[in-house]
Image (cartoon, rainbow, N blue to C red):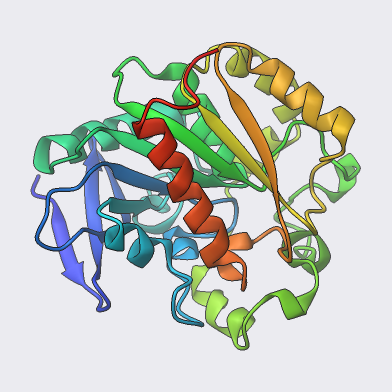
Length: 292
């Protein structure tokens, strides 16, 4: 099946990628006039879509635009159960299933596009869980590193506050102080919202038990960012030490993003965070932060 591309302006195009018979929608930006140095794969969180990484409320916030400016292709995919695949997977997929689908999508993309040095995953929230799962499952050798925000190991909320389709999402947990976001962010973000599939919210509660087995298999460098006002996850010194201790097969750095809430890539801090993520990619390409 042919890959489909549709321009939507500002150098970003809509794309459909055939992931082994599963069609995933998403967004694509590419550097102009030069081959890509690598591909940044942006993996959105629960209840969002790929457009999370293409904030339009203020110039300079979009990861898709910024990555292309620095010579990288940026591919933001709607995870299975979102966007085009929502009708095929109305209850979503498990993390293990999503990992298989994601790897198939990246393989398909690599057959049609120059991917430079390989794939670097920038993942948010539930997408961070998928990024770690995909890294643990990677046999291709194409993954360069992971940059994860809004995802930890130990929840800071009780089980009854975890995502559930029959509960209204918590603005405090998902956003933090409203002044951290440009005007019209919440109105413009409505088009990015999508119901969280049942299999995802059921698996979310199991994450603290799932992560240890996955983490020890990760071999690529990992950077984890917690927003200053992150409320879903514990990010005190004890929790951070426990998180990094799980990933004994690689180097892990944990940073905090000031003046940011959980949805960093939609806030004023988005450009700063994205620049730091791309700087980490640069370090990975230069061989820094490799396996311990």
